[in-house]
Length: 127
Image: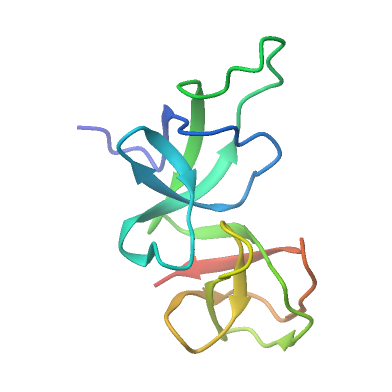
């Protein structure tokens, strides 16, 4: 049994540059979580694949920080809201792997106050 908070698994797609995105487990490996994937999110991507000369990324190992393992860094999607610490965050329907402030279908809670912008990296705890 693996009791580590960071685990590695094969990627289902090219996840290069997607660090801190919310991810899910699929039959073929780790992929970005869409807004409809609440039941299958497993954590946040810590380390994606390095650049591959041959362009093959599927099946290459990535590191995932497990869902309920502590405070995560997450990427904010399409929002410019002022967010208070303790506010709820939900998966962004327009940007897979990213979160937006929302009380509808929340998956995380903001750890700090921040002003959101697309691509902001903030701290959150998953519910």
